[in-house]
Image (cartoon, rainbow, N blue to C red):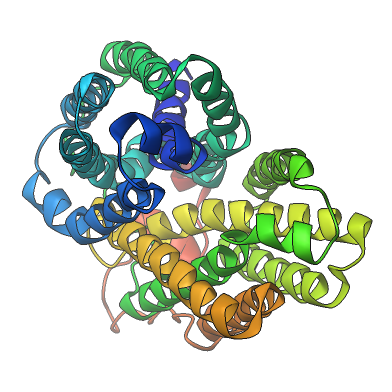
Length: 405
């Protein structure tokens, strides 16, 4: 359990580090003597590196034992974050952020199968949910806390705190994570590999993420212009969304092991309903807050279901499949923010929510497509021996008491 908590701490770290410049935009711009738009590049470029580097880097280190690799990545995170703290120029901050992004790209590809290896296969969904809960806790609590600290003690204090927590997580992971080779464990490859279903999973990841981000990127503008809240209320609304996100992760963890595809379809459908409702009723303050929280819950639960399904349908190595899905999510983040900006410019902030809902509808269609291509187990050739460990899966067969024991 300690190793799992350490891995969840790692997802907390990386999510907080990626998002901190959003909350510290103005302090960083003032201290580094650059326009706020250039500080925004620290987030955009970070996502681009993760998107492009996830699969190639994962393939490059595919034989490195999990504990050694994750420990090295966390050590790299601590060093690069410390360089960010000490940097005296924007160029050096950007370089340090790119180094952090490279470790991020590998960490998210490896952490899901590494966590799944810690427990029996029947608990994969719940284990993945715990890991993803770390990232959502970072958005709900870590980033607001880091922003608060940065506003009072300077932005460097926030990154220093993250680096210090990273050192603690590094010690926990290095001490408690078993040293297994990537190809040895039960989560090394998909439980029921299927390239077509994996393709639908990637498509759903891109589209549902794009839909969520198209709406979420401009949520502060939405609640002030459409819902009528004061700017000072935005933080509390985002906190409510963050808390709902953590609850969504925990809720889906209880059901994803029994029917992961149903969990995926249900969460995308819930996101669609929440965004459509926000588009229609967002001008009412109370429903707006509830629907924003519901959208956050749905998207967080979706990411947890996504992680569990990678371990099920990966057509090859699960770490490479997780890297591909991580890249797909970052495509969705970049694309959703871009499409939302176009909609905002041409049609106003309400249109960003409607665009998010429409993208979610398309994602739901992709997820529902899985129901049409579920594989049917082929019967063995006549006279072929039946493997005892698979006999219960074949029509008309059952284990003997000796086999069952």
